[in-house]
Every structure is written in structure tokens, then in C-alpha cells.
Length: 186
Image (cartoon, rainbow, N blue to C red; front, side, top):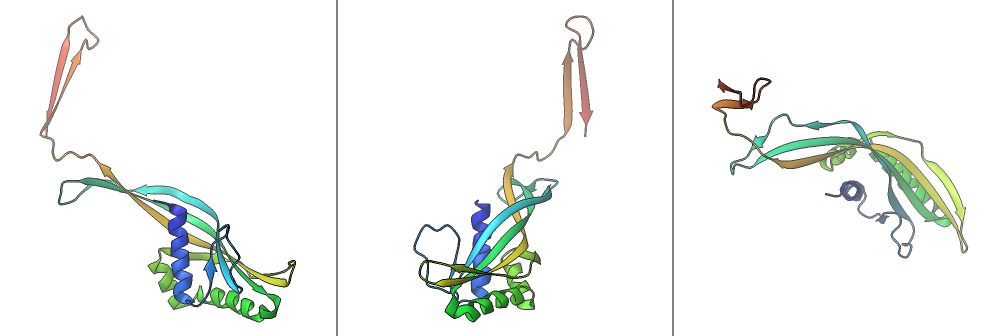
């Protein structure tokens, strides 16, 4: 299990299902820059929220294997960054605002649910101009916080039944070789 990869896959599937024609990448890919305009999905932080929740008992399947389920909730800080040349300024701005709008639509919420993410909050879109060697580029950043949960299922040992418990205590605070035997019948 790779928590970051699973989260990135969920975010990619979410955005690409809303906007299939967009070029979507992740940061730090160590490759050539794609043709603009494009969007970057950047997972900034992944903070555990609260305590984990573990199932109380062991669940036994039809093959006799026991398992325990643990769920940990996270608050994920995600930055969606939109990049384009200045001549496509309105196109890049429109991409940023379309995503911001679609985060809160019924279709957006349904797609989030399908990808096991949930929008908590977002900040206003920021516009940044950046002059590069050959041209002027526009960046729009949409900072969001999503809820994300991870479920871990671990194999557990289990006991089918207990008929009685017997305990034997040697040298139980008395003279040498003194033995106490206790039995509890269930």
C-alpha cells in the first residue's frame, strides 16, 4: 500500500473524469515540460486526523481466516496549479475557475465519493505571473483540503471457543513446592 500514490491516483481520476481533455501532471516528474496549458496536482501535506479506528473483534471469513480492520483519516493539503502562456491567459484562468466551481456541484461530490475523497475547504484562486527566458507565463493556484481515509486489513489469530481455563501457580507465596490450581468453567 502506498498512501500518497493511492491519493494521487484518486485525485487524477477525479479531475480527469470531470475534464478528460486537460493535460494533467504531477510535480517533480524530471522530464520535459508538457505543452501549455496544463494542470499540476501537488499533494503538499497528508496529516493524520484524530486517532485510528480499529474493529473491536476479529472477523472470520468462510475459510477460517481472521482479520482486523483499522481505518485512519487524513486531511490532505492539495494544490491544483494551472500553467499557460500569457497569450492563453483566459484559457488557463477558465480552467482554474471551472475546477473550483465543479468541486461543489452534485456531480463533483458524487465523483469525489467514487474516489474516496471529500472536499473540506479551499482558498481563493491566486494568480501569479512568471517571466521565463522565452515568454511570459501565467500560473493560477487553487489550494484545497480534502478528507481521505485509509483502510488496513490485517490477519489476526483467533480462538473459536473456550470451555474452561486452568491456572497453576507454583510457590505461590508459601513454602517451597506449594501449588495452587484454579479452574474456571465457562
